[in-house]
Length: 181
Image (cartoon, rainbow, N blue to C red; front, side, top):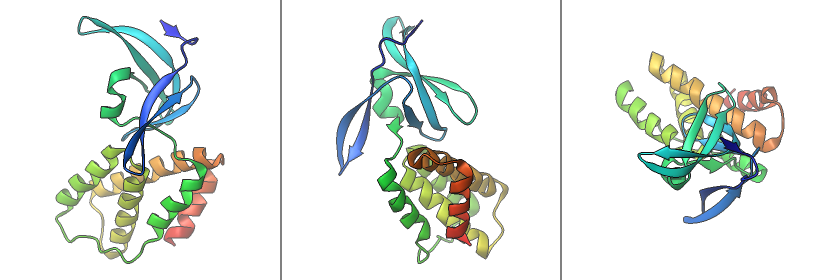
């Protein structure tokens, strides 16, 4: 049963290398690693492995998938808040770095390394993946997996930045095109 009156959702975020607890309310946006931005629908009390516990109900905005996260597992799954608007410029700074040498690894090794970065849920790691794949794309053809990952990283960034800046996704798409063209 969804308990809208219990609208507190706790989560951990990083601040200068230390952990800091943040409280979410029902309706807030949160980022679930590798899936993107979701809306906190509320908290349900569920029985998991014979123990009653609260779970966060998160609806992923891109595909409507609902995810339930035990409240005591938020840190381990990497759930975090959407970056504040003033951090978008730092993400763009990562994207603009052109002096970065993309490692000359096999595509599958690069793929695994980039997938690990995406799974962290860090918008800065995702920006690095997008930047590196765009740079690599100009040097050689990307593998199917790398092209798919480029699209994933791009979509994750567009969604979160559009929410952070409170603008339409098309605006962010144009901003990214300017950075990479």
